[in-house]
Image (cartoon, rainbow, N blue to C red; front, side):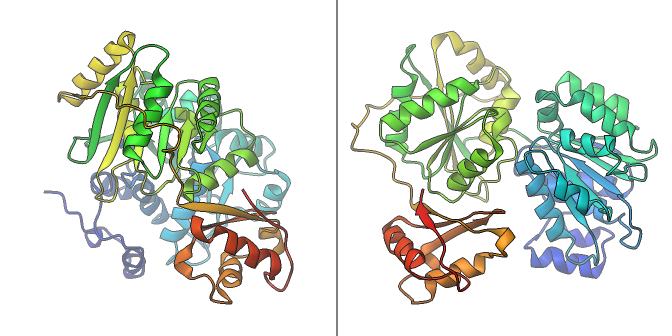
Length: 458
């Protein structure tokens, strides 16, 4: 049996102590299967579902090879979206706490390039970014990859779906031929196998169990007449009352239309798709992650990189023809030992998709009747409300400053305050719905860091 203790790996005592402080008790299946090969310097091609611990798998591995005293870029991690890149960078920084003087830099589109040039004057040991922005820095020679030892392609299938294939190959051409290449992908389409064959050397092929049974995720299927999916969705939301759910659509326009339909029925829903400006995308994700909006409607590509804890339900408004995409979608619920919920709507014409999923799962699916809608008064209430403050990172605003201002007069307690997000020029704080008016009054009439600030409720 493969050992799952991190102490079995060749890690320093300081590194192990840091893992323990981060509550890394034992290796997940993907970590146990891949870390020995990664630390042995081998190329790895790994398939694992969302939430499997893959970031720590490649993160722990690449950090062991970094030499902080050498000031050049030694590792590159390519991600499909800015959100995933930010998430990976944060995790790498947490894992690197015991490694002194290590520089990790995030380089993504959707943010000004000027400040990135300044940051690159002193090269990072590890660069994490999206292919478009990394390629731009390579072409301007602001980022040099000629001494990269470890290259990671994270969620490689989504990068190909988003049309990054040529960019990725051009970037790889800027790296040394003798390097370690780690490829992580939720699915293995032919294009992934082709990329692996062209950029990896005898990769160790790793697959961990990616199927979900009904003891972890309750999967229910509903056959609905044409034109009745939105009504069926509303009835299911009313019946199950999920605190947070991601509804998957196949197209951007479908996301937009469905969000409008649900809003007109009094449900708080927002759409996430590729046409959103980065600022609008950030605002949607902030409100969903802090539980101010209970329903997020998204395409597969737009939802990639979402880091949402305790997702109550995944709803397939439109089933994917690829069963592996289905597995990847529903893998976002039922984490951390909790039972998840996957609700699936389909028309009779989509029955072949259902059959393909059943064959892939190797277990019978559970068919259900759509419940009767309860009427417009039975709507989902988000537990939190978001307040927006017109100050941010550039004014040195920190989460502690906002928390302190809200709890100073003891009218609010720490448990009444949720997630706090700080951006360059704005900050967002979630407060419990019952205390939203009180919190807004405190911030409007009081001061944060000794200054009056404009505050509004979203």
